[in-house]
Length: 143
Image (tube, rainbow, N blue to C red; front, side, top):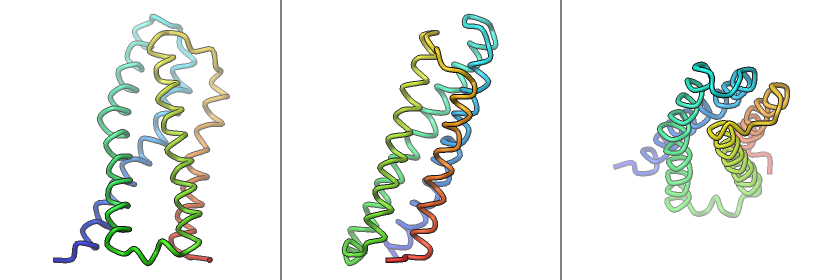
């Protein structure tokens, strides 16, 4: 049984699902920030944001970490590679952004958002920038 291959496949699946949510949730925030609190549209955004975070993003982030950890357990020699350390730093940054998004979702849930749609448009780019760095490190293994 190719345990490493299975862990790698599940890791990739988890990353894809996580990134889908990381790219979509801040876009929902952009639209939500343009609506008035208490409106039917605002309430719909609350449901969409909560379900996206809880049903897709949180499990996918967990899977990314678990299956990535499984790959490291199965191939511990990678722990001495500098590119992996840089990649893990970017994954930690992605996890931090994920938790920021979760915090901001709760401000919308409580009708306490004070940030502009432009603010969320800017943050919508952060997961993309982190993803670019992570993919280049994994594919090129520059150091």
